[in-house]
Amino acid sequence: MWAARTRYNRAMINVITCDDQVEWDDFVKTTDGHPLQLWGWGEVKASHGWSVERVRVGQGGAQLLIKRLPAPFGPLVYVPRGPVGSMLKSEDERTALVAYVKKTYHPTVLSVEPDTVGPLNWKGWRTSSNRILLARTAVLDLKKSEDELLADMTKKTRQYIRKSAKAGVDVRVASSRAEIDECLAIYKQTASRAGFALHGDRYYHDIAEKLDGDSPIYIAMHKGRVVAFLWPVVTPAVAFELYGGMNDEGQALRANYHLKWSVIRAMKQRGIERYDVNGLLNDGVTSFKKGFIPVETTMSGTLDYPMSPLYVVWNGLLPAIKRVLRAIR
Image (cartoon, rainbow, N blue to C red; front, side, top):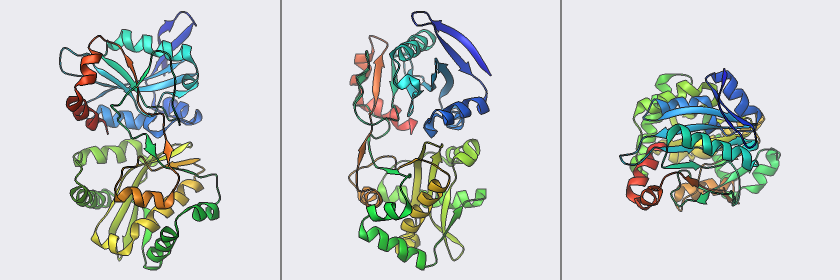
């Protein structure tokens, strides 16, 4: 249900909270919202150290993630790949959101990362170097035909797609906890090779449970074994890669090529408009991603609205900030 909490008087804009999953997800999906604005994503974060609130502001809206910071700082309020809908264009609605957040949470900063491309010049907001999600990414236009998508890929990528398919690699959606655990075992191997940190298993099981059909886990099978996986989260507007990996057998089979192409095709068949690989770094994974999508996309990045005199201090505590921001991902 929607419940009015306050009103921004200059433009008579209501700020309305939502405590109903169906209503919230319907709002996100019908306004071309990003999957990180879905109810289930907020519930995952709420189970792992965050608070969450969903608000409609005029015709727009935002899922707010709230993280307590050490004293004397007020909390960090974060909007992942949001806000949604008309708030992207309406200064009055953004002002109403700022007023509501400041009055309700007394935060150090309100940080947003809109699902938009290119710089944004919003009054009172500043571009932050303390990014949470990568602004540099690659996005496929799924309105193109399959032939057009294949033509845009590198020749090597097309060759490896065919090679892994002919090697007997089959792709389907994981259907059991045991298969998810096989994926997590592969992900741990991948993390060990690449040197990045992981959440505990419960975190990933919560994503599978709380997002359900909005976050299918695709697995590449060979001779009855999971050799690679790719895990997106989706709305009608966009498919957004969360996690992926492969074991040594999968690497030898180039299973990740057939797997990724199969997922792209599945997203296209669902009528999704864009496929976002969720960031590019200067590493081997980036080279793999760019084989599918050679042209890069630069998102609008992280925008901060400072809400405390301590923001300047907080903004200078880069090591501490990075520890907090890593906990968000």
